[in-house]
Length: 182
Image (cartoon, rainbow, N blue to C red):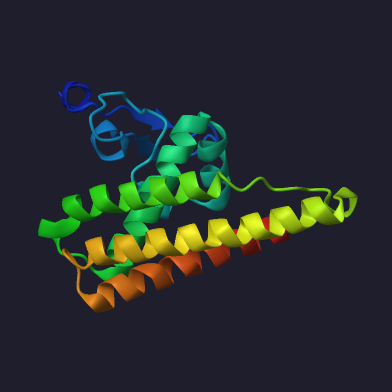
């Protein structure tokens, strides 16, 4: 049966809570980190995401755990990049692994910088120290990006690597724009 096939493949059909008839199918194989067998049942496939209206998307994201949301956003970002820079099917798995590694390293570097929300209350000495720390973190991010550019060049063309970094910048700007609007 269809439901038996879904169970064997690790997929579960879910109904959106908005009462619509759209069906979401989570895929553990495509969204779980490498080496895990954890099932993600609240995460739609990219093709399903594209057919959902904004209300359905909001409900799906709101019903995800923090870990599911993080995995979903990572997967969406990965798929946007793959589509945008047109990576051939035979190189996608290698790219995904390297891209995940790159993003993990970038995140670890960014976490070193402590964001201060109340800058006005910092002493001149503390503000200068934080400013210098931001320059150090920025340089580490740039160095990491340079290192991974060399690694990406082993599987992608220089044009694709350039477009990868441009696409990342566009996604970052869109996220910042949404945060300012919200």
